[in-house]
Picture 1: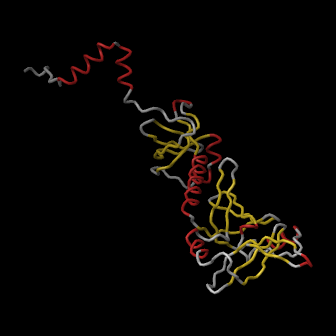
Picture 2 (picture 1 turned 90 degrees about the vertical axis):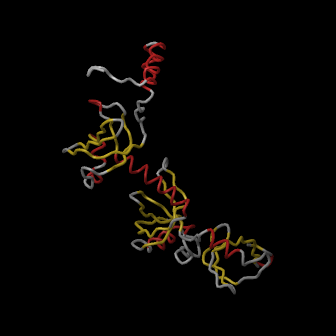
Picture 3 (picture 1 turned 180 degrees about the vertical axis):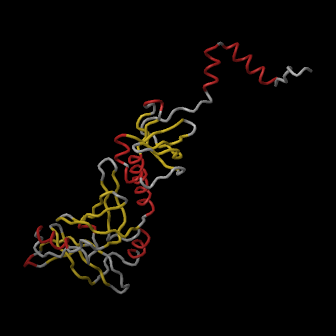
Length: 267
């Protein structure tokens, strides 16, 4: 065998012959089957930072090519980019799969937001708790911040000790009471996350599902319990229960007017 002779695998010869017999178009289609499809717009991709300039970040996004964060997307993510170094692995959202000069145009801020909303959903599923600072208040509840996103706790989701105790239900006085909580921290958990509306709703008063079931299981229909009225609303009262089990749980009592101005309470 001369040095120019080559050993050719029989299976390869058969495959090449089959492609040739099918025609050029089919042969090309077969070759393209192994080529990865370009990521679509809004898809999340992961890559390695390979370069930074004054107004751009370059990201290796295998096997698709090189991505770039520039222009408005760079300005929107300046605070994030400051913390990014060459060699770091980052996640980004595709803005334009076929951008200028063949780059995949990326958004770092949108990717971070997408990941935060996914984390919020997971926090709801896991019933995770967070200690958050109260930033502001209005007559409806408290404003706080989580992972850079604004959140809200409706007054109805506050623990009894934080619920505004205003006898006449005056909304201005309720707001004044709630403002006393500004600057303090509350232990809360997420009960709703809506990325389309940009809303995060938290609760402070609710117990974990296991604890709540354990407490409720100790009570039976018809039990007489002692408690303290902690708030009055248009449709009833909020009450603590304090009984032999030393449980502290909020219940709603529906209020019905009876004859001679007496009250009949139903749980």
